[in-house]
Image: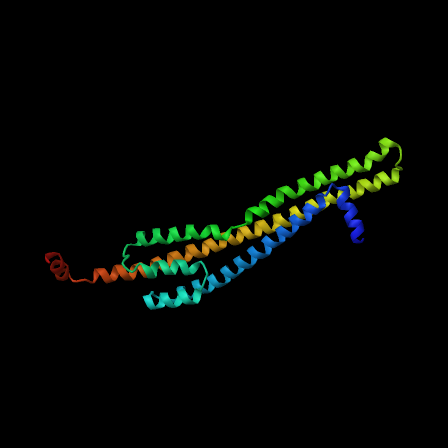
Length: 224
């Protein structure tokens, strides 16, 4: 099988195989890029959660240290919310702001996954279209009486390569799409876990600090 034969196959399918090669390259690019991004985010986020879990409480210096260690991970955004809002002393207010940050981060996780979803549906249709075009070419010789049965069957077999290629791309895309969607859910779960840990440790500290204010200090402040 040489380049000339591949070129003939692509020509017999009406150029559909060229489109399928391009679709395969785009699919592989998305799979590799999203797999690396999600793997790096989950691996680094797991370390962040483990370090935060070991702390009995959080202080501003500890938060700043964790933000620097987290780098560009989405988990750093949650830590930054708690650090940049030290006046928050209500659990629900802090929880709402952390949830807002998570919602802003989710589009970064499943970005470009729609391309895989499209490839899963489009690839078999392209393969079927290429096969139909190839079969038209194979049976056109019978109408003219210039083709022998072996040429027709050989043309049909070559036309089916387009369908097989489309099914291969669809199966590859479907498996990877389901795997990446699972990783996205796990990454969101990591952020939800970190959110709850921050609420349990950070909001509790500020609430306790505010309750330690002596009543006479409150009266003095209100009196002025």
